[in-house]
Amino acid sequence: MNEALLQRLATLEGESAVRRLMARYMDLCDVPRAQALVSELAELFCIDAIWEGIGTQTAQTFGQHRGREAVAAFVGGYLPPSDHFRLNLHYLTSESILVDGQSAQGQWIMQQISTYADGRSELFGTRLNIDFRCVDGTWLIAHFRTQRLFNQGLNA
Image (cartoon, rainbow, N blue to C red; front, side, top):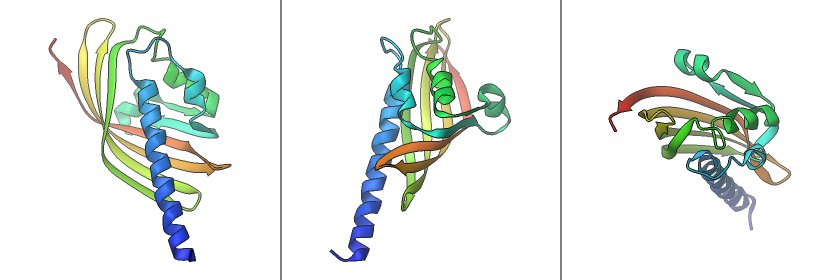
């Protein structure tokens, strides 16, 4: 194979790996689930990962978390056995992934439908900007940024 074809193949494989990584992350964040799989969440992130809310409202709500274990603990804190959510589903749309060697950048619009323990329900629209890094052949989340675009309370 020539070098250009190998590069194209590596790019397509990187894009596919990033898609699978994001699907697994969203699956682990969906509720109902018997119990949070915080150790599995942690495995999706680089050792030096950053997870943060950006924009005034989102930054105040979520803050910034640094390091694999801190990120997994923060995200896992919203999941069972916590009773924060009764239902929490994530849908990704408007995907854009750019692979550059051993790093990639992705952007999605995420729709999130949530019902809380107190019975309130909301629909969120969020922009995700995420940096990825391939570490020893495995694609991982390096920097996860979420920015709320809208939220709407839903009547039950």
